[in-house]
Image (cartoon, rainbow, N blue to C red; front, side, top):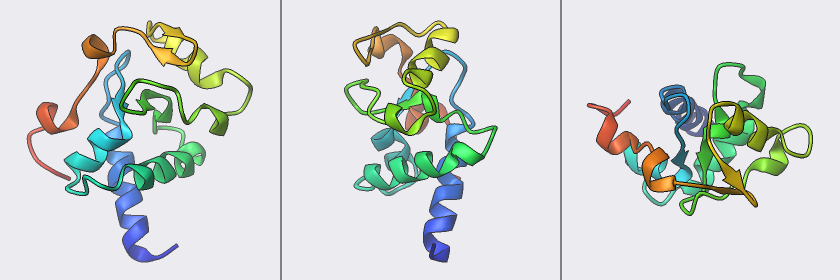
Length: 114
């Protein structure tokens, strides 16, 4: 992996570590916060690469509609949903319920960019 991608992935992981328990954010929100608004897909790749990193809560990152689009990258059939539900997040048919209430926007919540 090229150095620039590694650095971006590291920054994505640092933001993901800040997502509060019981809250979710989107790939696009992280990308926007990092100044790469059109790089939501790359944030998804970074989340997929984070599964070897124990302290990155990748399950808290969903698509902008609140869909668990990354669930197939988790072990087991419903691990992503189970992890979210264990934090009190309601999921119905792969869709986060009450997304407006649970959504954590790093652009608004964090003071400075990483």
